Amino acid sequence: MEALPSNLIFHELIGLYAEVFESTNPKLINICGRVIDETRNMLIIETEDTHEKMVPKNGTTFVFHLPSSSADHDQRVKIFGTLLLSQPENRVKNIRKIRMR
Image (cartoon, rainbow, N blue to C red; front, top):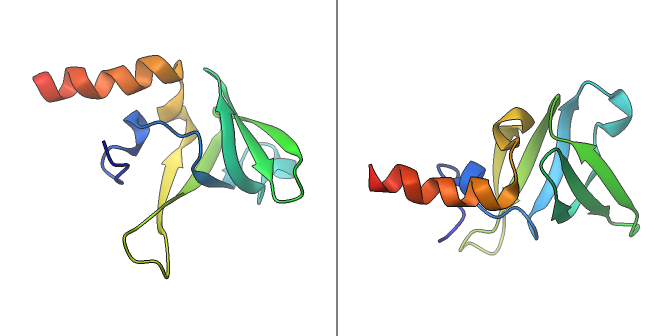
């Protein structure tokens, strides 16, 4: 399944480029890089200088860059981290349940 703005909260996030747009912790704002791991409450982002930053989902707004067929720019989607709060494998399964309704 292709990652689209309409299904991103149900999609695998590992490998996507992400930016911290807003956060209750001001030190996290503007962290950006590839999502390399995900837990129930955290995204682990590898920054361009190869540091791994653990960013809590709760209280954070992310901007994800979705690859597009046009090579000149990615599509950007803003997601509230609270929508991502669940175990990644359960969140991915939920799209199947919604489609079956």
